[in-house]
Image (cartoon, rainbow, N blue to C red; front, side, top):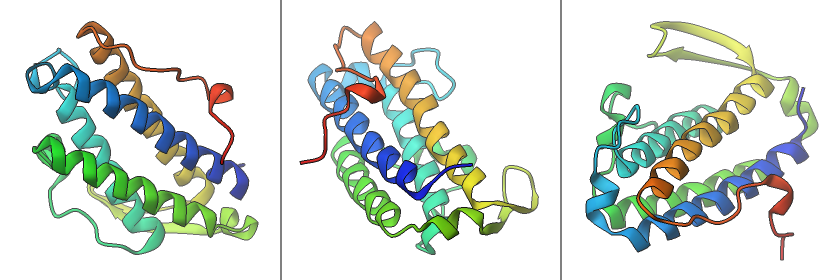
Length: 168
């Protein structure tokens, strides 16, 4: 399905895109970040909070770290302070990068078993499928944030994967 190298590329892409969106969101200020834009989670900040919550829950499954104590329904208010959200995002992106760097090809064939609060049951899926979902979830919500930022007058940078700068 996917390779360990794909995971490393997507971890870099995730970090690059988050830096892009957070820079744009910094420039528009608090009021537009908190405005209800009619998106599923309402505002830019609430959507980014949900995305951090989602990354935290998935990484707890992938690397055994701590899961969020906030339930899914409260994920838009997982982190409400912009400075804390920005710092937490940076820390999460570093964590994702470290995790991806340690993945091997055999890991892609492993199974992941967890209790899904969203489904209310035990789930057993291929790790590669779960990782694919993880990166797709990020892209989906970043797309929503990009649209909200654009509507607020911000000009986020490039989003195309092939435009990502080569690693230093």
